[in-house]
Image (cartoon, rainbow, N blue to C red; front, side, top):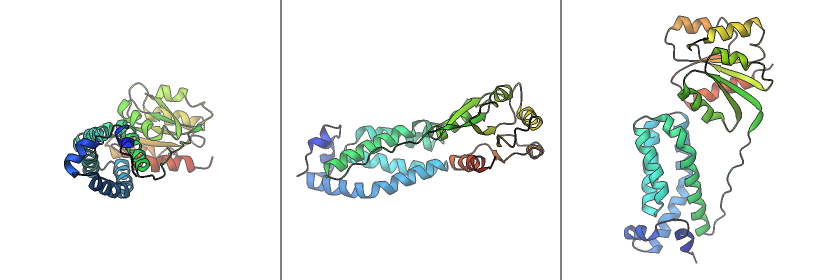
Length: 253
């Protein structure tokens, strides 16, 4: 027999849900349906977040919010509602900054529900942080550097330089496997960094991809005078930046 105290003791507002479902049998049956469908929903939420498709992301977190409200998952409903509002406003950086919080609460609730039904709970994934590899992000925009750091922080050491001078100081890092370099920065711009690396034969050792908001095609074309890996124009999404970093990592040195 299912012990409703497993739900109640973990903050599930069962009484409120019964106002909708009427009795525990209906609640349990509907909750099992939710449990059978939630993995696909979560995978799609992650997919739309990765490609920065905020329109479809908003639709799915709205659905997650509604499910959470029906079943008495009040905290999850609140988090999903915030994501719905921010994604509708196309605030992608809010989504990235708070995505782990949303997923952690979702997984917490799912484990409670699995325990309630006597199903095996899912352990939190072990994150393999590759501490022996460092990526240097050179960009004066804290928004961009924070965005990239959030994406890769569980995979690499991500070091940030706000201009070319700071970047040059990082080039003696033995763990540095690649650089994401903005062109238009104050003090020392990206071309100065490229020229320095070219003179010191560092472009073969440290692959560079350009990330730029510069709209002048001639300036972007000029960057290919150096042995760079690729150019990625801003704004970009998670999938785009991952593809570029993958190119950097796979280059033989």
